[in-house]
Amino acid sequence: MQRTRGYFAMGRDLVFGIDGNPRSYASALVYLRRAAARHYAPAQTLLGLMYANGYGVLKSDAMARQWYQLAAQQGYARAQINLGNAYSKGHGVSRDVKRAYACYASAKSHSQVGSVSFRDSESAMATLREHMMAAQISAVQQLHGQYQLRCLSGKLKTG
Image (cartoon, rainbow, N blue to C red; front, side, top):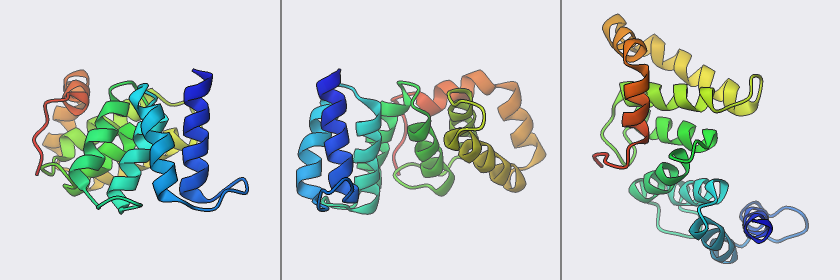
């Protein structure tokens, strides 16, 4: 696990050009893919971000969603938020506010109270509630667990 975290840390530093490392997306990909292959959710999430923004790879919302999905299934809150954002905006998937809300709710439940992920998921849920009809909110709340499973399911339509 130590080596996996090391791969992730080096990849992260290369993506953002921190800790004295010059920004190098190509080198970052090597390290992040090593960590992601070992099922390290933070690395999978950062790979998703790279695909979502086209950092050193061809921009691909579908590939970003796939990486977020892998990390989200492990209960990694940041990936669940990013996956919720994909559903909210219809990036790489069919737009689905119920699934987006479920992803945000799952992220909130996997975050420490007061953490950045907790606040981000709460904020995203509040924003969605402003745009959802009362019936949609009620359905999500009544079927919260089922929608979380739908959010985290690997069998999702891509758009």
